[in-house]
Picture 1 (tube, rainbow, N blue to C red):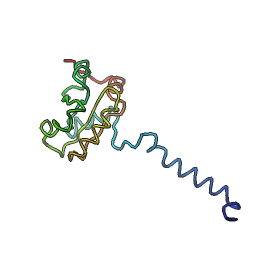
Picture 2: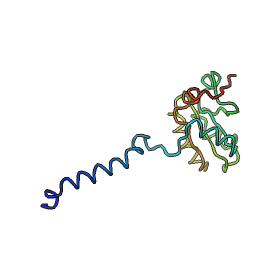
Picture 3: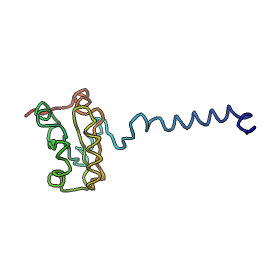
Picture 4: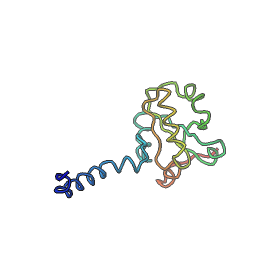
Length: 136
C-alpha cells in the first residue's frame, strides 16, 4: 500500500496516458471503419465500392450519392445479399446523419461483408464537402 501512496503521481500519469489512448475509440462510439467523404470518393473511384443508402424512400428521393442503391435499414438484412452479390467489394453505407449507417455496418458484417464501412456524418457530411447529389 505504501507503494501507491509514495508513487501516486506516477500512477496518475499512467492512468491519464491510458485514458488518452482510449479516448478516440470512446469518442467514436466504438464504431470501427467509418470514412470521411473524401475516403468514400477514393473507394468508389479506385476500388469500385458499392454505396448503399439505408435511408427510407422519402429521404433517398430528397438526395443521395450518385449510383447509390436504396435499401432501408429495416430491409437491409433481407435484401443486401440480392443487391450486392460480391462480398469482396468495399461496401459504403450512408444515411442522413450516419447513425443508421453504423447500425447497417453491423448487419452487413454479420452477413459476411467484411469491407463494410459507413460515411461519418452521413449525407450532411457529403453535402458539406460539396460533392454531387442525385435526386429522384
